[in-house]
Image (cartoon, rainbow, N blue to C red; front, side, top):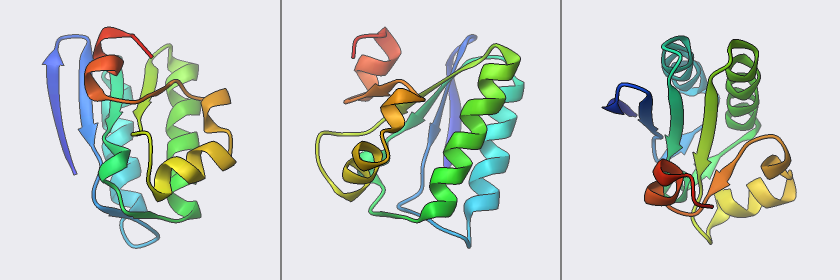
Length: 111
């Protein structure tokens, strides 16, 4: 997982290939640091994540709540296919978080 700022107001947090109980706390800590910066947070690219369990979903929802409470914005980049996309669709995370098909779409605000 990596994090870097693309502008003063945007931070991209790249997710690991797997997110589960073993690394969920690390992912949560990284997202919390990004949210605390007050920037627009882009969680990318979940299409490169091949496995996530319920702890990953909990981390994303918690980060979304923290972001909303602090006036920050959390965006998810999830490609058109794959297991994580199916999970995002089944759980209807798009009702809670803005979902984008590509990083460039998320950065430009075009979904």
